[in-house]
Length: 188
Image (tube, rainbow, N blue to C red):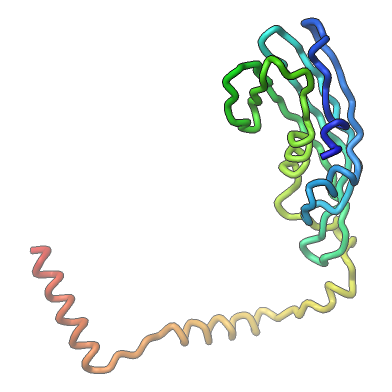
């Protein structure tokens, strides 16, 4: 993936101390992951990094906007991205799984690839419900949804409640009574 060069930090030659990096995130990142969740966007990722001999501590801020499908009208919908997170990168020959907060890399590595972290952070910062601001939805699509009155809703609920009533014939009623007596006897 060519994206990993765009969001990498060459930390190997850096002395212990504080550093800052900025990355421009555009449509190419979202296209590289080939997901329908995000159709495109433009964000800025700012990374404040503290380097030590044994680890990197990163404070990551991502702001901008992505385009998603509106859950209400299905049109393209701009969604604001405001993410703040921390990532600890530890150097070790024994590599553990990346858990979203701690990443392990070999001391022989010289680049830190943040592509996956940036993408996941943007996705996780999105709201569960993605809709246009009030009045921003496609009016033709909204008009196609049928609205029902309170009376119609109550009538539908009453019919559904009636359908839930189960009628028992005499044989099934007797079986239930026998079962009930057996259960009562077992509890005594």
